[in-house]
Image (cartoon, rainbow, N blue to C red; front, side):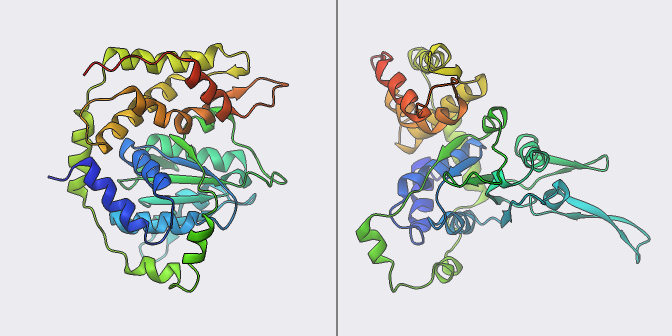
Length: 311
């Protein structure tokens, strides 16, 4: 039976044939996927976001859809519509692009709040309702929403309550100089992706999620997670701290991180490794404060007492 570590290594190796030097980011996406969560990727154009998700979809044997978010995008453009079929003499539902295993919501903050909400509801409920009829979404299901950190003109920023629906916030960033040189002259990324094979199965997903469920978390580590969360709620630099949803997300991420390391128990280092990715986008900086939320989480990590590892 496949282990979480083997499962992760297979996906990272496969996707790494397309996206060079981003193994850590790919591992974080695998964590989100295994946790049943979604990813918000804030990055500059041209860093390989679409190629990464296409390769990820190929690796897990899933369908992939990319949706370009624009101000005129309607909720029905995501979910689908009922149309009148003259041959059958009745209305038939035509599924939208959200009915896929891997969905890239490109520049999600360029769509209106109504359209953003339609996607976020699908992410949360794993189903959509159209004309009073409910349709379950495909499983497995993961959404990656992207935002450009520089351009803000013509955007509709996601409210904090909606940001909280994303399991993690990540950034790919540029490749190192040597890595970027190495991709010059190689085959086109699309050709490489078309040759990628499915390296895991649906049965593998069930097996690794069972292994993750069996990972134990001591009371001391649970208390450490709460100390970090409460640190955000008490910080004078923040108008609001991490929600209970964020607490559970960090707990899940730490368990998966431990399983990836080949352990059946969580240590404080697992929590520290995932804290910034899971928590930073869930806090609201106080008015007048211009501190980066990432720096605030890092400061709280540095100030919070780490429990001794009793294993």
